[in-house]
Length: 403
Ligand SMILES: [Zn+2]
Image: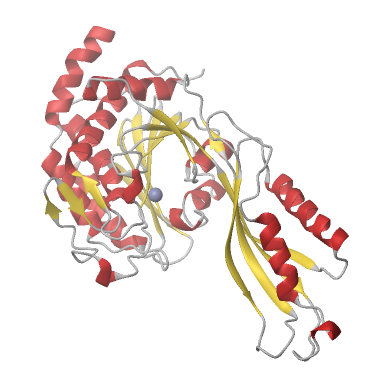
């Protein structure tokens, strides 16, 4: 099998058209699907045209809200054989400060081997490379024993509620293995920390600012919480993902300089490692606040959770990871690098609730995501297209479905 794979893989790689992959990236970037507000339907329409050209069928669109499009399409034989999922998000973070960009953020200018614009790295080049991979397989006439399912989703940048999680709630997440094309700089990402986002409200008692001893300052109380929480060291630890962290991201409170503040709040971003749950993290935050109260009975806090993404991992020796590693090695000439990510992606829905082995790999540059002058590397887009194509080829040639 190994020799057979090697011969056909160079033919597939030769069929990848890097210029076309760049063109797909440009077309996707020029559909400004900023989240908020979303408008993924703009990018979905562009993706759909290219997917059709690549020989995909079975198009379906799912929207929890108008414009928040999740596009499903398949390539190959969807009546039998295994399913390989190519998952990517269509939304991008807002370009925000358009003045800070050297080129308009949705112009997708190509210059010096780079393509510039919002979403180039995170992650429209990843989606483009996945489409180009299938286009190449189609051109060489490969007939897969099974099919690739594209899941081009909405809302990844805001916890995925209207995107991959929405597909999960509709029982649409099923497959034998999945690749997510998030920016990994062509490294293989095996796991990611989770995130617990909450606002901690402190309640005090207003009084005239000239007699602060007659009131209870919610600002003073919330400041104690901020000092106790920010940068705190936690004992939990994971070999791939390290330790939890805690950032106090915002602080607000008070009404007037001469009034003792009766309300104040902070928002916290507590990153979680595998083994931790929302309840566990919440309990830990409550215990820290209880400690503060023990030393200052006037403290009154309540916690309002507004986001939770659980951590997730895949083992390095999982079959889909090994197929990907072999494909990377064959297309780049060297073994891949592996890492764990401090931030979360939609991989958690596939891995944890969908029970689908999912690995994250893409052409986008990790440090470029969400930045002004975001860019992707043209050569990497070509390499990722070849890796995805070879991966799909190896998958359909070797994957054994559970009977
Ligand atoms: Zn992303």
